[in-house]
Image (cartoon, rainbow over all chains, first blue to last red; front, top):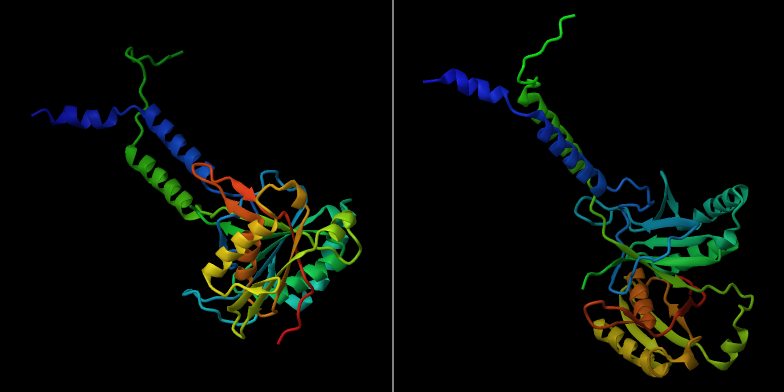
Length: 156
Length: 166
């Protein structure tokens, strides 16, 4: 029995293909993983619609506002009133006016006219429509004129 | 200088076990950070603030299509109305809305009615999903496979003033 040769065989594996496979896997997962910060808050469950197509031309100046509910792990609402999720903060819809004024100032300081900014509203399916309308009105008072309502694309 | 030359070429004798461990670590890291995101789409809406927009002449010629959505206290749709006509509620109501809009504009891609606007008037409590559905049904319908291109009806959608919460 030539046990020795078997032991030798284990050590004689060529490393190059192994390293190639490792790099392939890393590259694959790096492409799949979306590291882009799209300001899409996970807590907002958008309504589904078949006609919702992603914009073909990337928007130059988007401003994303997330409106949703605090939910537990099962999906039930912890708080029946809607919250606006903005970055790390959350506040009620009525108080969003202040934040929108801040955003208006920010856009002015970086030299962008708020009229060119598209406000993307990501609202949960169960948000009262009146609150979305109030958000739109407050945004208009802060100088924003373009609006887009987001929905997830329903697959055919 | 002692140049080590084995004659048949040097082979790196690396151990496999740590390599496999590192591969698994990387795999698990990327599997955990992988987030499968559903593609999102937009509906653009017009919100005239009160100052007349650039298409004032068209607005005088073509009246707005008024869509009214009435809800109950919990935000469910009770009635969907087009102009004065009630279309009911439920999914069939929205399908009827889609057909009626096509009739009102006289067929898809009609150049005469290109600038017609739909005004959506909804109760305060109505769930936002119904609004999206109404906008979608006014915007058009999907064409035949394989592309399912959009056949457009009305491009311009706006909201009426918010009604006070009941």
